[in-house]
Image (cartoon, rainbow, N blue to C red; front, side, top):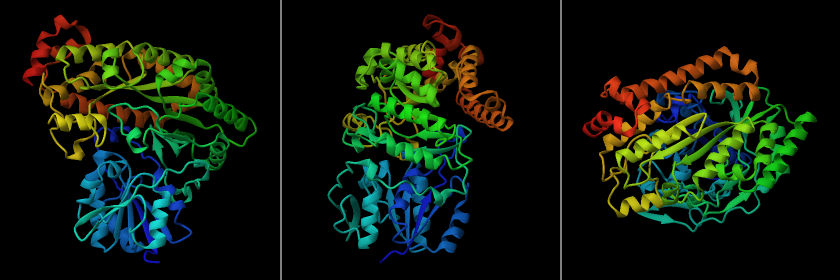
Amino acid sequence: MKWKRILLLVANYKTTGYDFYDSAFPPLALEYIAAYVEDLVKVRILDSKAANLSHKQVKKEIEKFKPDLVGLTVPVTSAIEDVLSYAKIAKDYGCTTVIGGWHPTLAVEQTLKSPWIDIVVRGEGEFTFRELIEKGSPEEVNGLSYMKNGEAIHNPERSFLKNLDELKFPARHLVKHHRYKIFNMNCDAIETSRGCPQGCKFCSTHVVYKRSWRPRSVENVVQELEIVSKNKRVTDIFFVDDNILVNMNRVKHLCLEIIKGKKEGRIKDLKFFFQGRLDAMARHPNITKLMGRAGFWLVLVGVEATDNKTLEKIEKGCKIDKIKAGIQVLHEAGIVVMGNVILGVDLEATIDDIIITIKRTNNLTLDLPSFTLLTPFPSTGFYSEMKEKNLLLSEDYSKYNWLTPVIKTPNFSPGALRTLLYLGFFNAGYYGGDFSNKIDMLKRTLKSRGLKYVRDPRRIYRTARAYFKWKRIVDKSLKSLDKKVKNQIRLGSLDEMEDLKRAIING
């Protein structure tokens, strides 16, 4: 066998927009990959982000393990340059480098241009990577791209696995020495389905998965929850599914089995947070309440827009009344709602339009409102449109972090758009809404997590640190605005914001 020692490396990437959460996500994708080759070779997962290792320390680990192949994944598009810097380290030691993830899949040609990358795994990697190791060559392995004699070779696509119950469980034992935290909670991650049938114009999920959705059976998911329950340190599970709510009857079945498993002691009192569509929860209030009973307590939702016209432009597939109804149903279920609004999706929008969007967000009663800028990720509908209209400011993907303007807009400068973004956070009380909003969120958290959770001094410290770190970023970004002028977005009507609007334009 050509490769006998494989290092799967998590880059210690830094990217504004993610790191203020003070989180370290479990490397689920690499855990799945490892599960498929640990019977063939010596494999190790080196999570340099969770361990906060420097490049020098990573080099020492490579010298110690002596891998002949290093596999890397790109967790978010803006991390690509950081990940490539680790690929360079691997190449300096003579290792074959293999890279996967959504960004390399969607931007395969650009990724292959890097001199530090030998092979790109496109799409689902488990069986592709195993076949690569078995054959010792990328030739005739479906799902791979590589360079040969200066030419990019793209092998045929690999068909999706139809029955996800056939997947091996992730090799969690390879990272058991790490403490993973999301939102200051000891966590693990589970994927119960792959893909999404929706076609939102800004999203890459339906591009990667061809607008398909494949679920695991409830029984298979419960089996994995029972395994995770044996880890005494884990208190929370992040369901990483892009759209776990496609089949709400399946969600109902899952909740009932979780409740049953907890009563019988097979599943410990785990808490869950997830991503989901508000319209699905609005249509199924009873199932949403059952989710609250099962331990689901926090949801990340894409609001995206605050009016029907813009929702249609981004092809969201729902209307604002369903978004509001979904938030209400979640609150009735005792679930905390973290919701995001995208600014800049309407290229014809004026400063007034975006200020109205920011102000409307207040009326949605989100527990944790946030804002991002339209970021046309490779191969999405918006990317094609921006390229066609010559509106891309940059294809430096390190800037594709949702907070840096990367497109031109006809009615104001990129600097004005960035100022509006941070005014959105300022208007929302930096993070968590106004005082009454924070009190409501605290009540929901107390009800779902209990007093001990809320009073944990370490959690209070970490939460405060993350909050003030983000507050400093917002304040620094708005330092050119006079305090009185800045406050107009909180206190004034549109007619009373003329000074603010002038400052945005001139800034």
